[in-house]
Amino acid sequence: MANPFYQYNLSDRRKMLADEGFVRDDHHIWSHTDGRSIGESVATAITDDAFFRFLSIEPPVLELDEPEIDPQSIADITLSELTN
Image (tube, rainbow, N blue to C red; front, side):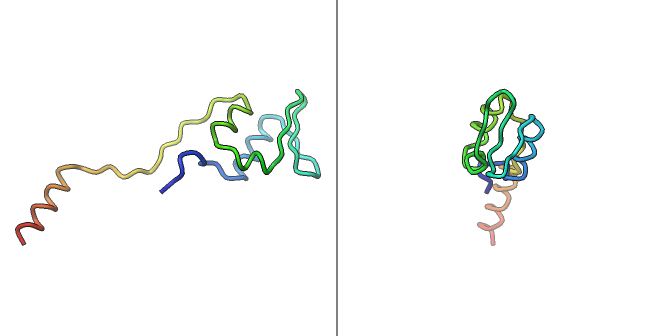
């Protein structure tokens, strides 16, 4: 089961930081020319929502692979089990 709060791994977050103009130094601190900075450990630890708020961008819509359950198929399985 996927964790809805952490959908992006470190490499995804690094790419997003770089795409937004952040540069990483030797101490793994990501800095932007507007004065914002974040440590790589913090960027990894915060939730996706907090990460996107820090970047000031809208989070992309993720579709979770949740199986759809058809109530009729459950009823059919239950009936077949009861009749056997």
